[in-house]
Amino acid sequence: MKLLPLILLVFITCWTEATKFVASGSIQCDMPGQTWCFVLTLIEIDIFYDDLLAATGTQCTSNKSWPYHLEGKDYDDGVFDNAYEVGLHVKHNCTTHGGMYDLLHDAGTYPIYIEKISVEWSPVLNDKGNHFISESYRSFVFD
Image 1 (tube, rainbow, N blue to C red):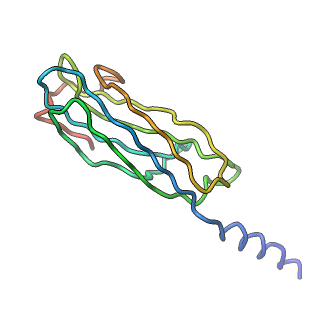
Image 2 (cartoon, one colour; image 1 turned 30 degrees about the vertical axis):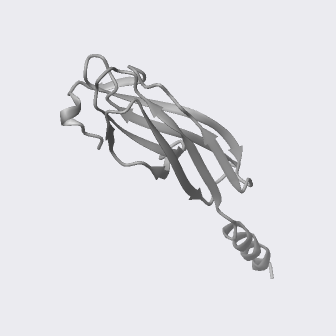
């Protein structure tokens, strides 16, 4: 009989609806005449390992902007954590001197019981972020 409350607690905890995550906006690069590339990911930030919710894959364009729309789902945020920490992470080569940059945007913290979380972000990437590799876009590597 003492086991029944524990079984019910596990059942209720596991029987949760997924939270839907939506991110939209436009990634921009104002470098004249440049073909530039990027990878954009929608993540739920955790202490040990971030949850990947959605990603664009590698995109290259000579346009000044690239609109995006990402959607993903997550079911919980781990033990003793009752909030989603949402982020957008972009790796890009929109630079004046070549090389690649890594930019993380904190999109906010939201309670886990919300059914849908929508965020918007439209950065101009020109030389923004942490420089992490000095090769040109012809050797574009994201892994």
